[in-house]
Image 1 (tube, rainbow, N blue to C red):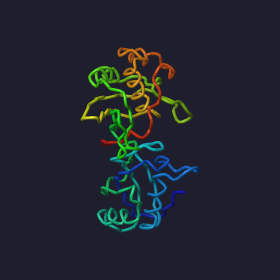
Image 2 (image 1 turned 60 degrees about the horizontal axis):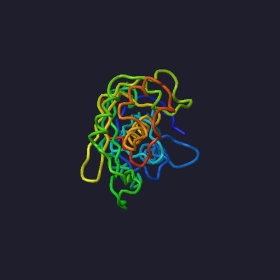
Image 3 (image 1 turned 135 degrees about the horizontal axis):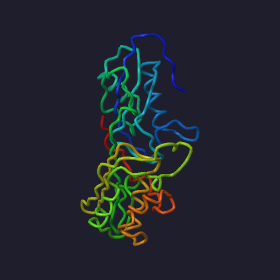
Image 4 (image 1 turned 45 degrees about the horizontal axis):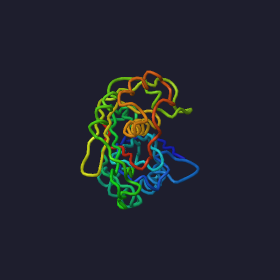
Length: 254
């Protein structure tokens, strides 16, 4: 439960963390497993006691990683941001690190002030597993034509209704349009990385976009089918949801 802080002299802080999501049930606190928010709040409480308006920049699912995850929170404790960063790194588990802490304007909100987010999806594209990437990249043993996939991925770019690329639940109501600014597919040896930036993302949107590209690679979906799938606004026309292990929240732009 979030602590309620009374009184004045509140400072609004922007705290940036990175985390290995392999052992977490996502960011948001849940009843059925340990989450990043839970361990972060536990560490923060040990240092500053009470706090208010703790907001994360995004939802992330079980097994998803973050290289840059931003949190806004209001505190009255006099600790300087640089010292709070050091203290958080003392109390956070080794799978989570505080990489920055700065004071921001009182009305700053980690989620609503975000201009765009960038995700990366990593695929180990080799006939041999890489044990050091277990849980950190999708193992895909069949050869991927990066040029073909990069060409198909350009059909995601632009402002579209992405209903076909969303797992619908009670969280997804209202505007289903998102503006995808870029989507690149690149290879570095056996590692294939898909990078997508947008003004926002629907639930499982990146993983379904990746899964659709993988089904294009398998010949199950035509390379030029993405525009039609977008128009259909029907989840059943897109590919399977790719595993969470390869997904990273890479950058948050304000």
